[in-house]
Length: 221
Image (cartoon, rainbow, N blue to C red):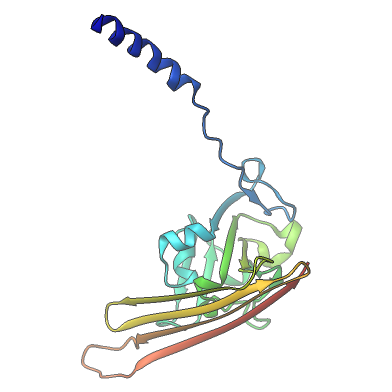
């Protein structure tokens, strides 16, 4: 009798495993062609960072996140808050288009974008399109396009957040913000503060270099 029950249990187990429904992930939507489409159907090479990815990777800056993109290199002129250049597939920084909520942020004179003033806490999503997009965006998109979407509130009430991070060499980061809205308007207010020693030779004594980035965004439905 015991042997029969064991055989029956073994026979039922494969049926239970086959009956489980497979997990199907929701398709990731990108805007590499200026129109929303599933990433699997996009013809351009695209890398996407969602808000969950940004929190999981625990990056200290937007440029640190972009350094994870294949074919993209970042050049800094100094420490935190210094001018940053982004190069896609060997093109110059003026040939890589950077959009923040659909708006160009590159300087008219140099073509560089001030990514050093964007804090990771401000970002909801980043799309990096590698390859020429000049037919869609113009001559400043020969290397590709970096689209940055900032965080927005919702109509579920006020949502505050705060973050404190510490690292080596007396480096600190603090950020706080508040988001909310109603059926017609969304808003997000935030500020980030970074304290990092200046990059100097070991024998030189220097004061810490603080940087602060206040932000405010609003969008009407």
